Image (cartoon, rainbow, N blue to C red; front, side, top):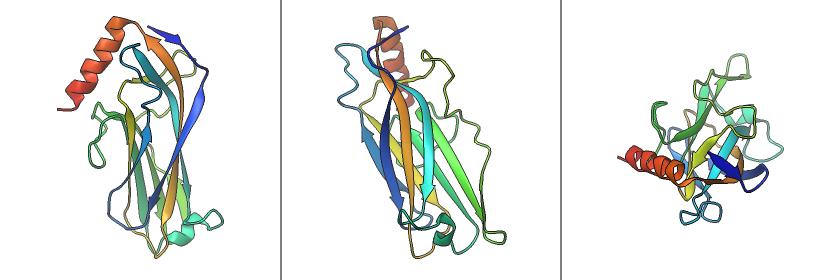
Length: 175
């Protein structure tokens, strides 16, 4: 299906959330990786989410004033906010919960696979020119929180039929 053009590399972007119950957005520009004319796509192998306080030295728990939940998603189409798991544009999602009584953080079971397989041939193909990051925190103190998104990917060349099928699916998901 795909011929590798590069080894796996990492793209990163930080999303800074400063207001509770408000969608916050960031993007990762893929314009230099995706080329329609050459049927070049980005193959996403895995996505990691790193949660931090408002500064690199601040403990994340100190940013919350009560029980809280952080949701973050990566999509290959701009949906304008968080989406349901059945949305074809969804690439990865994560959730972190904070229990104020026990002062503990916990990861919630996330039903969407953020790791697309063990082999170099496994992955999610993206032919759009951006990845969109959406995040929301249910409650937040005076300080904000940061979520770093790490996308492990490689550049591949698809055959004409596969590239067209992925492009059509992406366009159909836009409706």
